[in-house]
Length: 268
Image 1 (tube, rainbow, N blue to C red):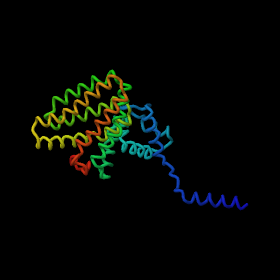
Image 2 (tube, one colour):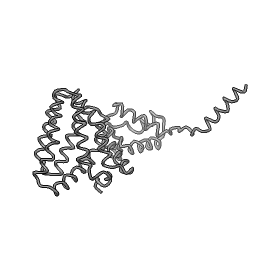
Image 3 (tube, helix red, strand yellow):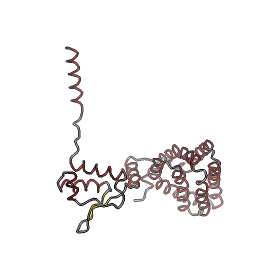
Image 4 (cartoon, helix red, strand yellow):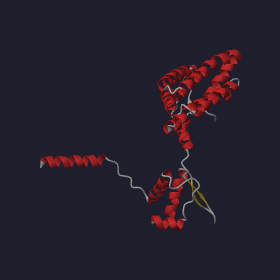
């Protein structure tokens, strides 16, 4: 008897501490159903939802409820509603750009430094390189060599050179085929481009062109070495080599900018 009473008291205490369960309202339920169809591929970019009257009948909801569901989906940029006789609700596929833009906004609000961005790259790029050597040893070298050639062509233009370097890194991640890594890189590439353009510009003002070319040539040679390792399918050495490259690059780009925040790099 005492054991049952204790269990009952414990149970009441547990439920007392819990927050009330959130019960979705009708508009949220309708929006979630449509969202699931979009994510599942049943509804595709440019598709038009059935007429409101048909959806009201299908879901058993009122017009105000359906329109509130539309507003939820519009806020998530999954639907756009056109008014008028030829209007309707048009479907949009989830936009990956929203991931990067919102992530970047959060990072700025948290006072994230550029150094932290480079640290994140050091953590995941070598792993991406391993995947490239495993899965794209035949296709990746041609693509990467084209970018490397372009880097050499624009070496005297700080902005173009920074963009070209960032593109090489971005392609490494894209060629890995790993979608989480691709989205992670997308959230950081603008910061990297802008920061590297600034560093190269400052560097140019302090040294002559020959010294600049000599300092970046080592990095370009390292890229060429990586391409050869990928071509050979040597995933172990490719990963090791790129980790060393990223460590050296971190010192090159971050020295003197250790405390710089993302907000200081991004345009107003």
